[in-house]
Length: 522
Image 1: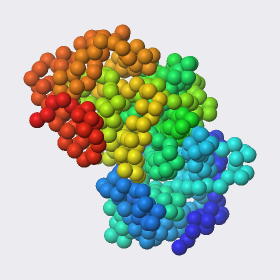
Image 2: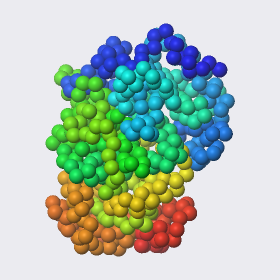
Image 3: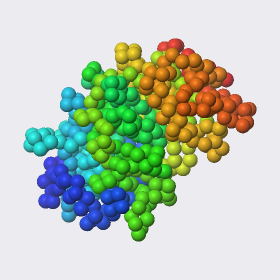
Image 4: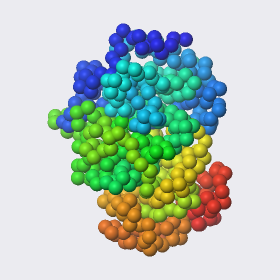
């Protein structure tokens, strides 16, 4: 087997190029173009989202100890992996030039993972440069990677020969400490593969790894925002009145919360400066725009044009946002927000959860999968993703859920379920809840204004819903009031409650947690 060290000896291996040098390479190689903002524009071809069905973990004596095998963590043999690794390394050795980035995952020095990302494309290496934590000159001198990502998008697998399902593959070898990616140009696979690795490593060190964003107020009050792609994690955590810790992936140790990444990967559909000034202004030189349509004459991005995909993205470093925490480390959370984008228009826009309800909804991880976040999703689909991050969790979900429950209790955190989805009816009938209302609700929650307010109990879900919140129309807080057809609302509410029960049947948890689900039962 050709080892990765042969690849590192590539005659034209560009290592840790600067941002301007990488941008120049992107342009010279015809991989992208410069927009009016100074950002690089790229297209990712037919793969405009993740390919979860093409993700595998190598089955060996290491992975068999802890990995929760199933439809998410699909096993693949060591022999299959090694044959593919040989092929990909040979493939890259034939290229005129290859790009390498050395950096870290994890802002807490006690838990950081030195990584190397080797790329066929310059823009993918720029992506790694912006999304992971960059080393100092001193750190580079003694740098020794513990995990390596090798990405060769133009290498297409042959399923009949290579043992994959399609031409695309994302394979994690915990034993060899290598991630192998081929057949897809979607850069999000690079970031999410390392997140999956951290989701394996951190809990074994008694650190809860979380698919969430985080920010902190002037008083050191930390807030976490859990939610799948499209629920508003990035948008809602980029708050002008609070400092951003990170927008997607964090660890929670005995010392507090830390960011796993060094950048942001924000959805840009319908982005405006008025609604999201921090994200809008962060898209400048060195940033990457994926699958965004621009005016060919002016180079001006049109964030409303989703002709390539609804999953248009911007990748930029954290320091492109003014009010951030440096380094991305803070204390223990006081407020935890579970975000869901409910396309059925049933769940209240905000409700306060008991500890048992928090455990129930964390394990449920309900949302509507929004168009474009995965291949083949063209309109919202209801989905349950355990711990709001099932596609990236190598361990049994109960491991993460139990750790969160312990930390909620230990640090007395307040937990809220926030629906950023539809009101006035389901997708196609109602409308998306206004961002201004969601922000007002979350600000009230973080400030502690909802801890002791009058609430009503939702008749189908048993959720404790505030009766009144400053800056939010009263009728919005009661979804049924926003529907013209009350009978249709009740029918859909019962249907959704039953879907929760059916999904939760898979979990072996206490009676108290089971009881914390929807009060309606068929």
